[in-house]
Amino acid sequence: MTSLFTEPPRANPDPRKRTTLDEVTELVKREEQTRLSEHTNKTAQLREARLGLTRNKTGE
Image 1 (cartoon, rainbow, N blue to C red):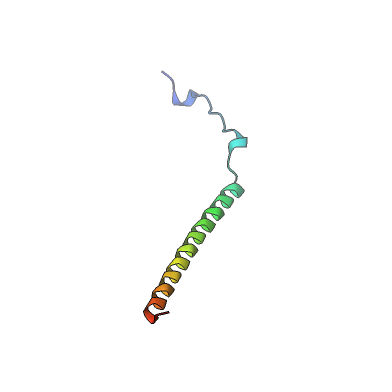
Image 2 (cartoon, helix red, strand yellow):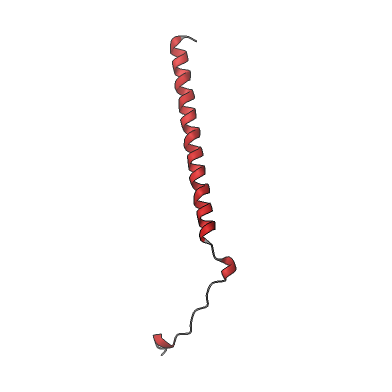
């Protein structure tokens, strides 16, 4: 039976594959920018649709 205290140490992950804080920050910024762009596009589409409805009501 193996004791918990005699377990061999686990190898550290390859440092070349580790994600740095800067990389994570960049990924978060990109994701936020994407969401902001999508929101801006939807807002613009709604505004255009609203203007189209207003134009139709006034007969333009």
